[in-house]
Length: 544
Image (cartoon, rainbow, N blue to C red; front, side):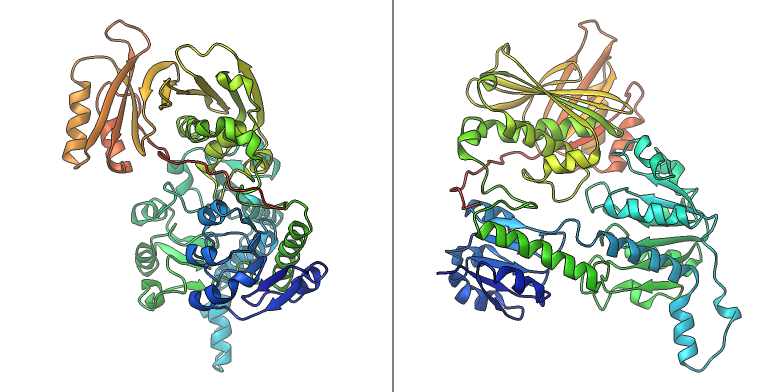
């Protein structure tokens, strides 16, 4: 009997043609959770877009489910953890809408620059207001791109072709890659804000980019700045943008994404008096893009149901248990070691060196490599997982070097990550203590014993009396509770360089870091976030 596939959310019918080669296919409208729970146990595969929310309750009812496909880039509407725990493969189409999103960005930029939406509305009202809608040329203007991923790279190429000067701010990309596109890399946001005539955003929403465009940063931009965002809502403070437009400091903005979607009727942008172009998240809404993602995901579901592998899986239900089992207790340590090294090391990555010691030398360490890569990349990329981390690593263009060394000191096994960037080298070592307790044991030559904590401050400073008290006072004044504090020396002499490491119960905001950096004798202060208490489950092998 053929397997059954359910397709919802108005996906192109070509998906059914592809899947009918190996399965019985049913198309349905978007279904509510209760209804989907009632019928989902009949199906071996599910294909959705963004409307259907695949919840843990639905996955619990999906007793026969082998694979879920999202016809699009993200998978935020699918509970990945629950799917993985149940051995269900989740796939998407990461490249399907790249051209569409880049073209929509350019379309919005030109519509904004030439006031096309307002002119269109005016002439349809029977008016002829040529002087009212005088726009600007983008030729010879400076376009600033925040981020240089797949979509950002296409936008930069198009802008250069139109005769624009392009500057890029992306702390995780190399200068060589930017210059290949005919653009200039700017290392500091302080420098970046003031040189852009038009600003376009191509960054995921992360801790660093949330509300990156706010009242303070807007005021540091040129008067007359124009802003385009087709990336993610929540990167722009919408109230601050409204105020900037109405004050005249921001000449115009064009947005395809919003903090809450569908857009909240109370969104301040809806009542903005000024030049503002808005579209309802249409970046991927072209016939070609929808066809591409439908074909891509349908082919992957067909292949998995036919006993083959999926090319764009975003979870690890088919990772071989025999490889993962001996090293699974080190996976979270490996990921956090990579994540810590990336946050300490600034600049574009040139080389990642991974060295395992002790008992790890006796095993296949491919899972360890993937975990380190996931940690390194997930600091600045969205949707990085144990399947796509090696692919993303290749796309970033840096070399990964692996080695083994039998000596591990006092530890059962250890993982050293050495990250070389165009700004320097950072080294972090994580180890498993004899009682299976994971610890960070070295940071850039300093011997430490750091638990895998969520909120960490790393503060290199001059070793002299009073330093701990000054930092503690700043944290206390900001209502930040200290969980643990240690000081590590490279040299035993007083007056040399030391590093203070503090774990806290709360997030450390940039304003607090700036205050710490002002203390005399402190060289720098970095807020580090890690992912404690995360275990890797090994589901039963699927048919992939």
